[in-house]
Image (cartoon, rainbow, N blue to C red; front, side, top):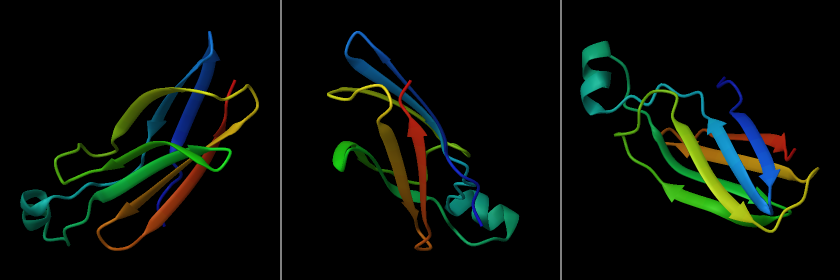
Length: 101
């Protein structure tokens, strides 16, 4: 089972800055072949606040192991929860939450 994504979210001057560290091996074709494992990497990631998507990205095998994502958005308040969800090539979905400080 995958470890949770670490999330830090801070509100400053009306802008929320989110830093997220996803725990994933991100094995592309070359790395998987060398390690004699199956190819598996995060293919899709979203972040939402109050059921509104604030960040959405399709990814590929070219992100590093344990990818670090940083983004900013407006329209949230302290205490709101940021929900980060990612899906990988094997169909595993992982969801983590973090409170905006």
